[in-house]
Length: 105
Image (cartoon, rainbow, N blue to C red; front, side, top):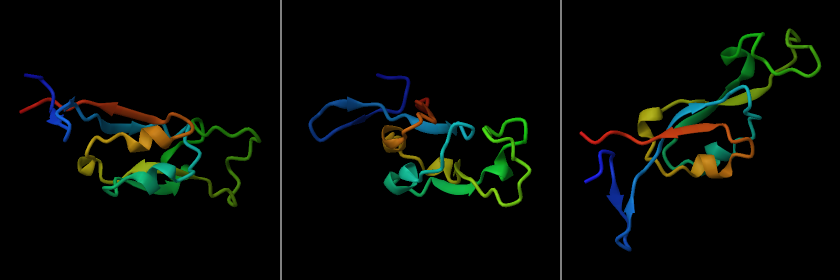
């Protein structure tokens, strides 16, 4: 028996879900693809300036302090609602997600 939470597909294949644990918000472009495919409302868009400090902000133009900059990034809103399908990771063009298996109780 697996030490991780494991399920079985309709076809009888064993499947171990991997739950989202982190988003690299420095790499995220705020495209919203993960938000659209997530069946459990795990994510929300937030302003990049609210989650990243000036030193982390990947700003090619040097205008991080610009008040008109309202760049958005994805944020984990309801991480405990993740079902481990990894759909977010499959549609992400920047490979921003970290997933982990959950230990079985």
